[in-house]
Image (tube, rainbow, N blue to C red; front, side, top):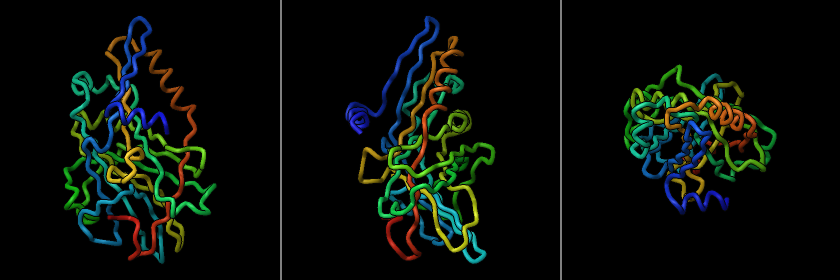
Length: 251
């Protein structure tokens, strides 16, 4: 927590330099509120522009009907350096950092698992006009998945979205769709919840951490970054949306 406080207080990005005589690696952290846009959609409501303090990802089959919550999030790429915007292949890793939120739904949920899915949006959307029926299309091939396990010891999760971010720079930054792997859990609604860019806890809002090189020989550094990422444990709380008509999923 102390590290995140220092990071946020200092700037909206941080740079990490590493050299092996041939390459220089830099790390940049984008805050989701500098600025960004977000909205939640669900097939159980047709409300437009549900601007929630939570990024909700939930899916359940109830009485033969599939019910879902999905969340959309778009970072501002104007702050990326020219070398990355010109050649996104300079990106070594890109991680979407999410902080579990909404403690009211965490009781008795430990040891449960769920699969988080992040997709690349390919159409323009407007946070005040988006609902389930007009949600933007996504790239069916541009998908990142992560198995999430509830744990009190892990304050955040990191999703590898490297290929998605590269494609966003190449083909247009329309943002991420955050959802849950479709599954059947009869008459039980379960899922995931993270702080959105609208959450009152500023230090829990999503981050996008991008590590990139200056374009010279970086094979050894890429391997090191990949090994560090794979060795990091990942877990997060499980979120259960309230019954229909309840509160907690939107402002």
